[in-house]
Image 1 (cartoon, rainbow, N blue to C red):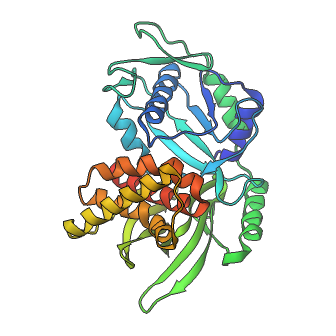
Image 2: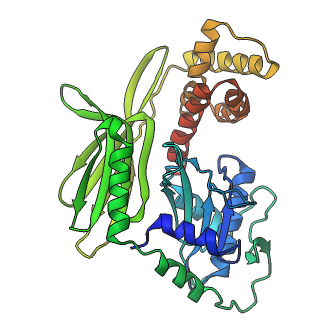
Image 3: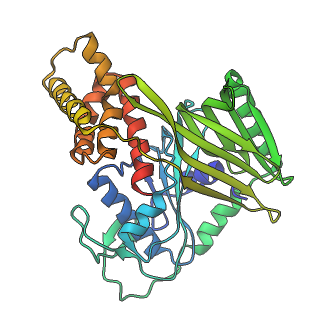
Length: 377
C-alpha cells in the first residue's frame, strides 16, 4: 500500500514538472476558467500516460517546491465532473494528505489519474477550449495536439520506481497513529484496526441528544495511506463502526431568520475487505428545504443590497453585519429554491467576503462546498 505523503515527497524531490506529474499552488473548479484548466491537465496527463498513473500535487509553491497546503477539499463528486466534460474519461481520485508542519485545516491535494487505453478529449466547449480538443503533455506544459501519433511508453518504469519507494511500513503507520493521537488531544482521539491491517484514527467533539450521538470539529484519517478522509470545523456528523466498515453521515445546518434545522447531506461508507483492499462509497442524502417564494424574494433583494454596500466600501451597521454572516447560506437556499441568479451573486461576493473577515469567508466556503456536492450529484 502506497503511503501518499511519501509519494508526494518523492515526486517533489526527484522530479521537475514533466509528462507524468504536475504541481499547482491551488485549483478553483468553482469558476469556468479554473474548471477548464483542471480538465485540460487531466486530459493531457491521461493521454500522455497510457500505461502508468500520473499525478497532480496541489498546495506547493512553483519556484521552490515549498509545501504550503490548501483547504481540505471533500469533493467525492469530482469523477462526475470528469465524466461530464471528457470523452473517454480516466478514473480520477482526489485525496487530502496531511503534513505535520501544516496547520490543522490545511492539507496537500493529490490527484491520481489512472491509465486507460483510449484517447481522452473534451466532450464540449468550456471557457476558451473547444469540444473535441485533445491535449498532451509537452514537458511541463499541457498542449493541444493531433492524436494520430504513436504514444510512446516512456514513463512506466520511472513511475513504478517512485511508487515502490513510497510503500508503507510499520514505522510509518505507528508514527502516523501517535502523531494523530498527540495532535488531536483536544477532542478525544481514537483509533481502530480493521481486518488486522487498516488503521483509522478519528477525533471529534461529542454531543449526545435523546436519541443520537453527534460529533463536531471532526477529523478522520486512514493512517496506512496518510489520507485525511474527512475534516470539518462546522458540520455535525454521526459515526457508525462495525468490524468491516466505518460509516459517516454528514449533516448541514440550514435555515432562515434564526429558524435553523440539521439536514442530512451525505453518507460515506468505508468498507474494508479481507483481500487487503478497501472501498469508499458515497450517497447523497440531501433534500433541499423549500420556502415561501415571497419570503425568498425579500431575502434575495436584501442580500443584493448588502453586497452592493460591500462593493462600494460602505460601513455596515450591527444588524447588517449579522445579515452578512447569513448571506452565503441564504443565497444558497435561494438557489436551491430555483433562484438561478443567486449562485452568480454568491460567486460575485467571494472577494468582498474574503476581504471583510475570516469568519464570513469561512461561511462562504461552507456554502460553496455544499453546492459542489449537490451540483455534481
